Length: 534
Image (cartoon, rainbow, N blue to C red):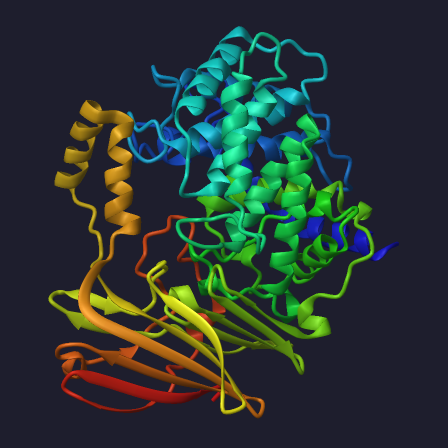
């Protein structure tokens, strides 16, 4: 048995334990009006009066299980599973809104993710129909979703745009579905041009490994149906960037990610890894510890695991034995790189991996072979009923790699963000329903501004220097501005104040003790210093 085949067997041992969880999410009663729905909160708990259609991606797991011959899979070839898949497609078509979109978080939303990801999943399912005729209602829903997606580009979260583009390319191969080739090419050109030369695609202002993996999943499926070499070149650049961002044992510097994701999706990397040594190395590192309790597979909640993350892992299973020989990862071979566009510095030396995320306020990680050794997430202080924080993804941070007196110095300097916690109340939900009824999709930019992008300024500035010399790192921080020194600053926890639905799962780094700082200053300045790694 090859190493890749052993990796396949080990991953299957983990995933098959979760298959019942995934089936539990789906309404399987053939007499139910919601047969095929994957939103358990809607059809079973009755906690919502609408179905979140992004969850229909769970059908992809059923398809893998129906077709898979891996040992111990009782669903293989079972006609009941085929009936559930067909029911899921019909349910998807029945929940389409008048304009062609779908809901995810509230009624009449017409959000981009539910349209893009559900069409992408439906396109993959219909591609493998095996000559079976597609029901007319499903084809009509596909056409409506195609028209909606072509009219609504996504410019801030490129993994979502990748899903939409892959869904459009898959839909164009279906009989009777019309996709405007000129408009699609305009979107494709803009998408590929948005990739940084460093290899990452923008996710709300910076790179995010979790969502970059999702982008690679979509790009591989797009490549298979179009043979567009731009996709292959983009995937190879992305795999090269990801290789630098892995610590020993395939661990991740979670809060270096622009959207704070703490998981990876393997399908696109696995397919690319058949010919790309860097992608093969990343896959082996990210899956080698899948059975261990601290692996991301075991902390991801049902909403993202069952319908988002697991479908990528299940789809990757059959292709793992085809992985080519890997190249050494930087965390194995050593080296350092400063990615100036995103402000991230990575250094791998003497079995340790150091990461510095300059455009997130200088978030730092230090790993050793056995796990995370130290991490620092900046500072917080209560101010005006809100929280002033240095940990915030922003283009306003000025980052640099310097040489001072023979030392390597990482520098970031920018504004402190003032942010509160957003409370969900009955009055706000009632207002959301009313405004959604009146404005539909036009409400989304306002909500994103309030919950994701907007962080108020508070007139304070933060400067962080990480000095690297003689095998150790010294953090030197300064907070300045009117009354900065009078605030009660405390080391920030792992959590970010920026709202990201896919984040905030438990990570082992949350158990780290608070760092010990030496501090001084005056009324308008707070300064502190400590050694990273103790």
